[in-house]
Amino acid sequence: MSSSRYYEELAAAFVRGRLGNAAATIDDGLRAGLRLHKFKADATLARVQKVLGILRAVGPESLLDVGSGRGTFLWPLLDAFPGLAVTSIDISDQRILDLRAVRDGGVTRLTPVLANAQEMPFAGGSFDVVTMLEVLEHMVDPQAALTRAVAVARRFVILSVPSVPDDNPEHIHLFSVDDLRHMADVAGARRVTIDHVLNHRIAVLQ
Image (cartoon, rainbow, N blue to C red; front, side):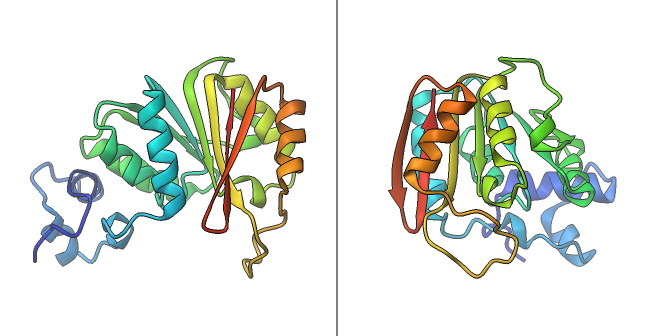
């Protein structure tokens, strides 16, 4: 079966890590029944494309991705920036195990950490850039998470949130532009710019 549909480096690393076989291929993973759909290189979401464009202009040296989940942003990020050191945090044990399989399979610039975004275990200024795509609307205390993100970022925090109501029961907040500006101010950001793309707001905090 052709592997051209996938982020090949990442999918193959996941297979190697999960199977414990340094020579394993994507096809071996498919035959073993591994779920590789999350690595499919389908059309990238508009908000992901927007943030990748911002990052190309910023040129980060290190990046913390908060709430990486199934990798909707993380896989395109790692694919687009092959030399970038990325630390990824999530509160899900299973998702961190999947990320560790990718690292164990050879993507050593990825560092997965099991952590709560509201209590990130990093010193101030640990990362050039912090990204938080589709995270804050899930948080019981989004202000605490954003304040912590600003503290650990040396240059920028880049986030996306929905701009219109949706039917996702896990979304417990809907942020207006004024909400985001106020939260950025409380978090200690010196400046915030907000853009819009396909039912989402993209905010860049400095």
